[in-house]
Length: 94
Image (cartoon, rainbow, N blue to C red; front, side, top):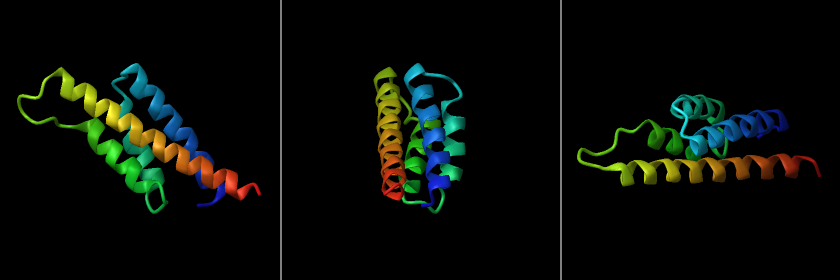
């Protein structure tokens, strides 16, 4: 991952994480955009999984608890991808 790719991905993932925390309706769209940025990069699978969770759909009969759990899991995947991108960026600074 180049430093430019890492910076772009860090910025996109930070936006995604904040949207998930605020429960913004745009979170799935932001995650889909971040997943496109992350394609072919090491954190790509994490971002893609977060995007899939954020856009649902939840199984039929799933209640609010399932929606909260899906959002929290997407947030954790987003944070893990962000940390991976930051580590690549810090490694490039050596």
